[in-house]
Length: 177
Image 1 (cartoon, rainbow, N blue to C red):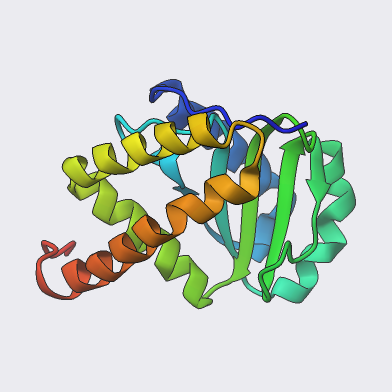
Image 2 (cartoon, rainbow, N blue to C red):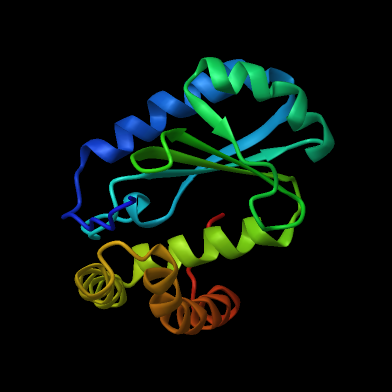
């Protein structure tokens, strides 16, 4: 049975991402466009389930299935689209004890921007990140073995933050130039 465990931020998560990104780049070589650390483990000081979420942009999503065997050799379990059209999803570890998630989209897919703007907004707004941490801690206590309940409990907060994040990006975000 899969347990929901939310733990304090671990600065080591960044190096775990970087190590895995190097492995993924070696597997996908010229197909990979960009590799991003996303999710709560990518946000400083945020409590999170200790699973490294990685988003990879590729040139053509249809080619990703040809890499399933190489991903298995790295310890990943291919999950197909995993419920999101246009995505390929891989978990590392087992169904009950995951260490990494890899979400792969073709460059330009709208889910890429959604993930990145959410991450960037929470990085720039630590008070919102703390509110999200508190919500996740409470949900993990309330739904210790119910991933669907845990996810459903986060959805209203996530949707509100995404809406704020798009507005922030359009109006308030400092120029990255």
